[in-house]
Image (cartoon, rainbow, N blue to C red; front, side, top):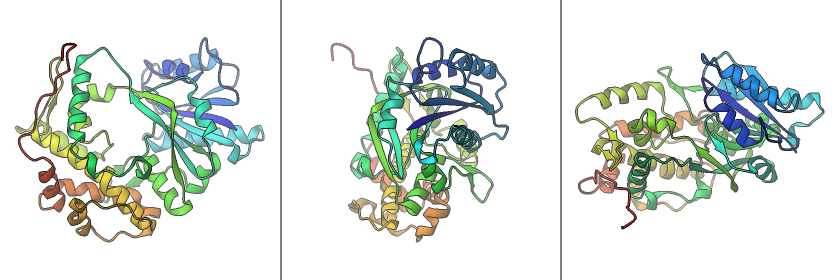
Length: 373
């Protein structure tokens, strides 16, 4: 099976060469057999295009392709990259069911044998997801921040479904056959009534694939990817509050206003401790409950599967609108956004559940253990 790795790039001159090299493309490395890299510039204003050219020049002829997608966003460059990979495959007589598309990001490090291990796991109507970690840096602030994440996430762990029943897909470390991508309808843009674009495009495609083709998700534990901490450094409060989930622009604007206000959501990274305000803590708990407890249970119900329901979720589930399988096929992003909107409604039963999880005063500090502890 041939492989095409698709990487959208927007002002990634500092990272794209290292990412390409980690995948086996670039100076001093041999590309995996039968693999190509498609780099899609999405309107960079720095030297990204030139760096992409150097990556292509350092690889065997034709193995690395660089193209341009002028329409900004998450969906257009990924979809354009897949379409370009499909054209290249057709030119060499490769059938759609014999081409594996791997989605990657320009600031992620992929561990050795990533492509080979993902290729070995490919199957019909299968969405592959690699094992994902966070790149280690010698920065105690990140260690403190991670300790704080784990402490808060532990409060909702008992409500979450098993890993095999989760429905969210990490866009930067996944893959699928081209024929499946085409059958599932590909990546699509979806909008809220206020015009805000809904993100999590690969998760939405997977939800449609579940409803239309009975697709399955396969975790490829031996294929590893290490994500950058860039977004944490850029906005630790937002990343913490949303559990890393990409929210729509209208919500982000409201969140930014709240973060500037006294008593709003706030996370402070420090070398000795990380601190979090109660509202940021509540938001992370709420996102975890919606994304890893409610959403997968609702999806399973629509697909005719039964997951064990924790009685603490019952009141929230009973208050939800009646979703139909057609919603999953046609507007999965709307479903996700509707569930997340409960976080902004103080009268929602979700708030009562969050109160029961956030019992007592929040612990505001997370220390890095010393060698003596």
